[in-house]
Each structure stands twice: as C-alpha cells, then as structure tokens.
Image 1 (cartoon, rainbow, N blue to C red):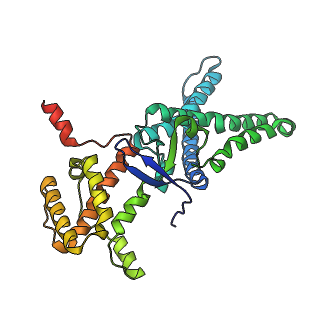
Image 2: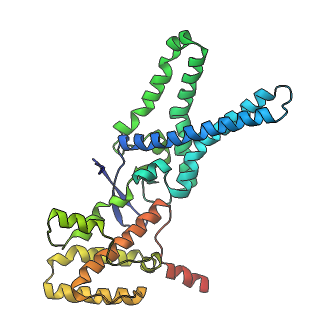
Image 3: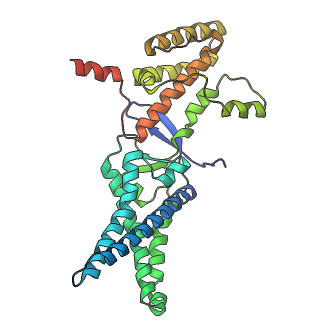
Length: 313
C-alpha cells in the first residue's frame, strides 16, 4: 500500500543542494517502532531462556541468583537500547524503519555524528522505557498499588508521546535534542519532477508497466562519483530550463552533454539521439540518489578524483 505523506522537509546539504524529502508521520514511526519491538521481544525471550539455562547448568555460589538477575537486567538494558544504536549507526535506520523505507538524518544536512545517534536513543530510556518499567513494577506489587500510582507512568508516556503530533517535523524529544529527523529518502520531490519532465503522457496501464521495469541505463557508483557538486548543480539547472529552449538548441545541448558524460565516466553503450534527454534524466537521478545515500550515512559528496589526486601528491 502506498504511503501518504502530509509534510516535506527541505534539507540543504553542505554542497548547497536542496533536497525535499517526505517526513515520516507519527503513525509511520509508530508502525516502525512496533515492528522493532516485536523483534526485541523475541530477543528478550531467547535471552531469558539462555539465562535460565546457564543458571541450571552452572554451579552458582551463595547469592548467585541475584547475580544472574543483575546480569540479566544489564543485558536487557544493552539489548533494548543498543539495538537501536547499532542499526542506526550502521545503516541509518533500524530494521523496522528500513522495512518502511525510512532513514534517520541530520536536520541541517550536515554530517550525522555518532553522538546524535546516542542522544536520540538514550532519550528513549526517559521517554518510554523508564515509565514502562515503573508500570511493570507497580503491577507486580499488587492491584491496590497499581490503582493508586499507575496513573503517573501513563501520564509520563502520554506527555512525551504527543511530541511527534505537535512538532511540525514530527520529531520526538530525542530528535529535538539530537537535531535529527526521520525521512523517506527515496521519495525526493525534485528528483521525481525532473525525471518525469518531458515524458509523453501515456495511459495508466502503460505507465504502471513502465514503472515496474528497471531503468534503461544503469550507472555504477564509481561513475556518478566522478562528477562532484558543481556538475550536479549545472545539470539540474539545465534540466530545469531545457523546456523553454528552442528544440534545435536543446537537442544540440543534450548531444554535447551526453557525449561529455559518456566520455568522462567511460559509459560502455552508445546513446541514440532520441534518448539523450532520457539518459541525462537517469544520470541526474543516479547522482541525486548517490547524494541522498551519502547524506543518510553522514558523508559529504566529494569527487573521488580529487581524493585520488591528494593521495598522489
């Protein structure tokens, strides 16, 4: 089912390129979170079985039960917090977010440091895990204690739970403190606008068939890395202004651009003249996707050739 987004955020990258990305709504974020919680519950069950097995197999000294319980609680803390930190550091998203196509990025488009990941996830301990443990402790004391004190943890959770609904970027408190947002990078508005521009209007069935097919021209990461931020901005400007040009001038410009790009990136195929515009749009899309991927992983868009030149000198 197609996701519906009601708000976009404009990210200005360090290369001064504007990326408009759909924000994950609070309901999307809740769905991803519950997906992750189901995995954590399974891991917790396996961890509990392991602790019980070790307790029965190992000769425990006096007070060994309390030691095993303390170890279990430490492992639980590391599991329920380290799970989010590990996946967001490595992939920019947890499995729950990745299943929905979401990523955690820096709101200002800069490098996403590990400290921001730590802050946004440790804050979940205050926002949710602490009141949840308090609720569990109250429930274990007895029904009378729950009726007297159980309301406070619920109010605690509710107080932090409303943040994504009232914040214009759907951020929770951890995002506010770490300067992060949750977006869907693959749905860039500008990229879609440029790629479809100039295509003939086709029937809905033909459009769906075209969307299901892979792109006609494929570009490796090494190819799109050859061009840097300046060339990307120039290509974007050309694609924006090309519909206003005379047909003859546009064809000549596209021919020159395609020849230069093919030569510079060593593209193996010959591009027919009637597909110059398609080739440029797909090349721009590949460059932009590469930029978004680097933004998600906290890397700036730099030319590989410049790095190689530095190493040589």
